[in-house]
Length: 331
Ligand code: SAM
Ligand code: DTB
Ligand code: SF4
Image 1 (cartoon, rainbow, N blue to C red):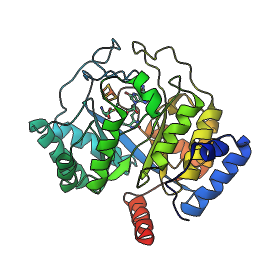
Image 2 (image 1 turned 120 degrees about the horizontal axis):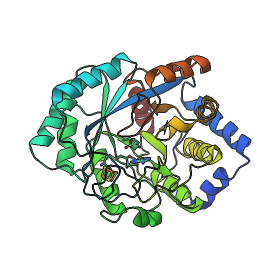
Image 3 (image 1 turned 180 degrees about the vertical axis):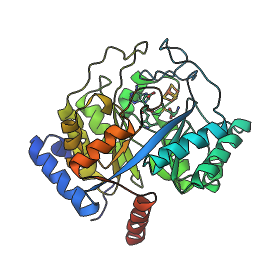
Image 4 (image 1 turned 180 degrees about the horizontal axis):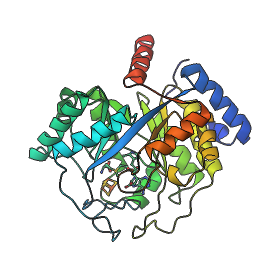
């Protein structure tokens, strides 16, 4: 199937608004045409630099300016990170994602240390992903040389609503980093958050931006807000499962070759809800007791879920091969 990069708001809205069961059915069909429906890719997050962030992202417990109880810690020792990565691999994770509460990467010793971590964990035979804030072209190239497989950098919401959520950087800044990552031939992971008080148009606008990128992100995380006390969004109510299903199914239909990641917010969802998310086209998750600072289902719980549903973990680098094949077909 040819990938489209010119989806309009009207077209995306027509898909999003379809009767829910038909929408899930359509998404499920497209999912099965492009992926093995029994496989779900499992990533594990390690917060290598927690808290004390200078940015003002309204949803984030790690912003220094909000009193959330998250303490600011220095960069984690390489040895500790390696041990945690090995544990995650042993528990079945095929990707390890290193997160830092930074606005941007700076060319300093800490960055060199992160490059060492990327090298070390890549050597274990797992995919390494980083999410470190804004990157320049040369920093992206250095990460690529160290073996980095993917980079996560979310656009979070629509361009319009972004201004109400974050004031310390722009949507344009975000898109620039995504370009730098793509230029360095690193796999792009980019998505956003729902449940921040945005309108339906904001959700559709976010999906339009993602699907109109020159190359669709290889991975599209759909997070639902984890409302943390002390953040400006602490009072937001959890969104209904139906909205999450519509987001996942629409993303699956308009970006049929991307991994759609059922991300933050999974801890409060039942097995039944999660099963519907997989049926709607989600094919990756974060597993392990913590996301970066908030609780998430433990590996054992996810193993039980996988067993119940007859799901298997996607081996490392398998989705890469698939996406590479699509690339070859396209050119
Ligand atoms: N500091 C880097 C950055 O902002 O790109 C990397 C880490 S940041 C925590 C990664 C992503 O986590 C954010 O872009 C946001 O989409 C997501 N996130 C943060 N707090 C969240 C929350 N409370 N609920 C859901 N998603 C959240
Ligand atoms: C993404 O889209 N979600 C993950 C990962 N990328 C880095 C992070 C979610 C963070 C949730 C809040 C926390 O645990 O601090
Ligand atoms: Fe900092 Fe990232 Fe949190 Fe924003 S989302 S406050 S940049 S850690």
